[in-house]
Length: 213
Image 1 (cartoon, rainbow, N blue to C red):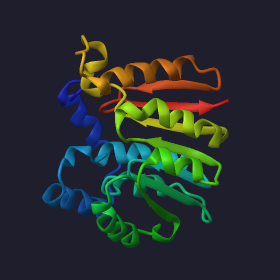
Image 2 (image 1 turned 90 degrees about the horizontal axis):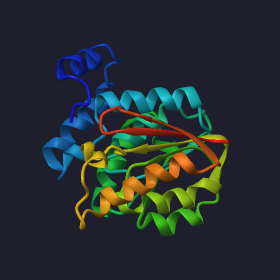
Image 3 (image 1 turned 180 degrees about the horizontal axis):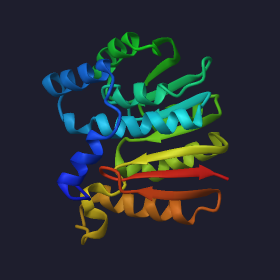
Image 4 (image 1 turned 90 degrees about the vertical axis):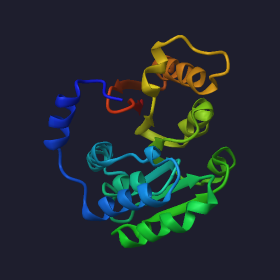
């Protein structure tokens, strides 16, 4: 979905740094072999994630929702030399695909995979994070926020993906649309929670930046 005219969107993409060759390969193989390839962050948003991570220069990153590993590698580009990225995904069938590309990148030794239910894994991570990226099942977004907010250092950042949900957040919500209902609640939560300051960016399907005060 384009939130600006398609011609202008194309201009934006054409004047943004190109994705690295490895990520081009990951992108291509995801579309060839993996179900629901639209879940991939993609080249433009990947460069946005990379840039934000480089600005933050985090020591520890938490990613909720790995998929094929594209966004993890983008975020890892900003890690400190001794930093770590912990990424969680419930789909064990993708673990080998992810690890192949992690190890082909410059950050393989810094990226740690966790397979299973994120609501069970996050409480057991004995880490403080400078950057958290939430890009998993939408009904659990408010739950993930509650689980990570006390694991983030002061000044740390939460990035939340798909918060515009192809525009459904401003449409009439169907009774059985749990994802849209959860995102409406989540977006309101981010605005009202006094522990953070938030800006929602209309990038692709919506990306929220929340900074812990």
